[in-house]
Image 1 (cartoon, rainbow, N blue to C red):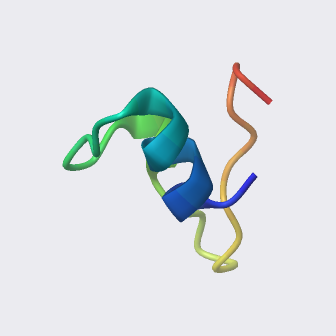
Image 2 (tube, rainbow, N blue to C red):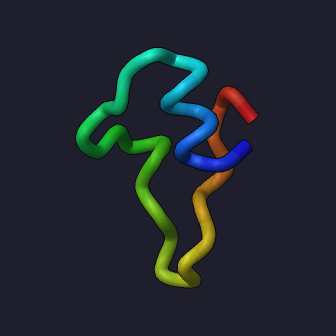
Length: 34
């Protein structure tokens, strides 16, 4: 699930949640929500 879709599902867009933070590789770190 992409960031846009995730935020849309949540109904809000967190500024920079730890789970949303990108890894140095440019990929998203595994979120507990998965």
